[in-house]
Image 1: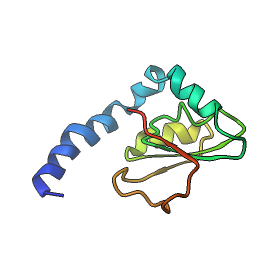
Image 2 (image 1 turned 30 degrees about the vertical axis):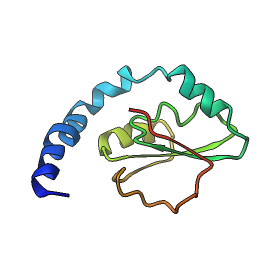
Image 3 (image 1 turned 135 degrees about the vertical axis):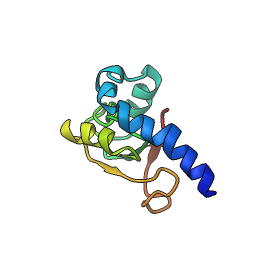
Image 4 (image 1 turned 120 degrees about the vertical axis):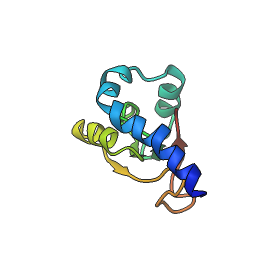
Length: 109
């Protein structure tokens, strides 16, 4: 990535999420109905990734599947982790997962 573009992304995206993370806990409490339904429609035992999971509001929608979350913003990941979610910090453009390792993937922004 171009160094100037990377700096702009850091300043106008990553730093903003990092500084506003404490407020997302309240703002993101409602799961979108179609996303909730998609997750509930998955077969029991399915492995699902939530790329850009934020505070993890979709990670516990369906107890019959396993949903792993990841997000670039460490403070948001910490909120999800404090809620008992299985999450990790990673760059959503350079994921540490094998190809075709999940039954489904969501990335909601």
